[in-house]
Amino acid sequence: MAIPSYAMSCFKIPPKLCYEIESMMARYWWGQKNEERKFHWLSWKKMCSSKFVGGMGIKELEVFNMTLLAKQTWRLLQNKESLFHKMYAARYFSDGNLLTASLGGNLSYAWRGIREAKRLLV
Image 1: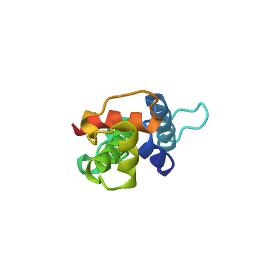
Image 2: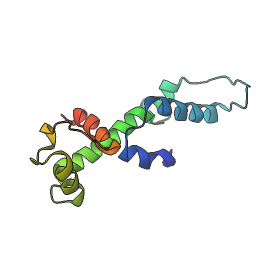
Image 3: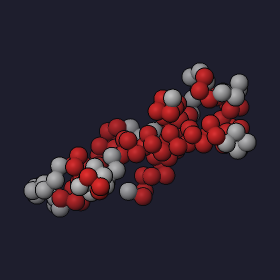
């Protein structure tokens, strides 16, 4: 889980890749080797639910990805004196307001993820 976390905090990971990583995690938990199938004692949804409600607390990667990107968006909104904010403001929202920034052209992949996560905060 630690390996994709940094990339997820910077970029929106495609849903197909999230599904493939979750599939690898599920095979690890359920002990699948090659073509051999093991019995699934819990559904993946139950394993991803909180420990407080009886789950295993495994993160759903798409939700986790959007959460990390929303955290970056929050940093842009709160820390207006940071280099991070100044760089993105100069490039993507020159009026200084992230919430009203237009999509524009020639977008970086990181900015696209932040724009998608902005919807969560709004």
